[in-house]
Image (cartoon, rainbow, N blue to C red; front, side, top):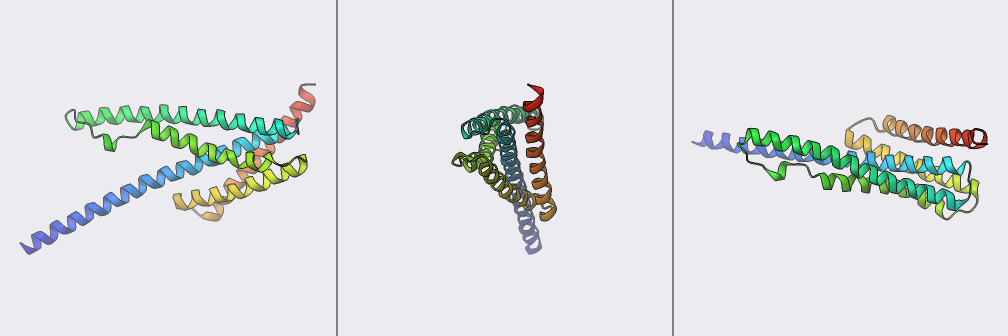
Length: 201
């Protein structure tokens, strides 16, 4: 009897450990997705501001461009995530009906609305960084410098967070994110300046 009770207790402990590991895994996936969404908002908005600023260096034009990018990107992320997660929701509902004789466990199903809201919010948080950095600087060259500095700091932070959550090498991950963000801004700035100066004249 005692050995039987011990075995039951150990089985329960193993199940609890598995549940905790599963919960942690799901939480880490959500956090990592949020970091990637914020990084996307940061790079997209900063690149748009840099690109348009190459042709129209006044602060109003740059900020309006960044704000338009924030709104469009947040809406796009929300709609895309909603459609994607809803497809997953339908698949899992159908699977549960087959496996459980028509019964559905709503607690185990993904929430399209929550996923869309989280994705949109993450993008917006990242997009706010270059907007705030450049909103109060009137001189163009100083504004560009402040935006690049703020974006660089945020890229390093997002790279570090992504590495920690994904259990990847921190230095390499941060360097990839940083170089990728710099490259996106440089390419957008260069091509927009080229097209604006020569292609549309």
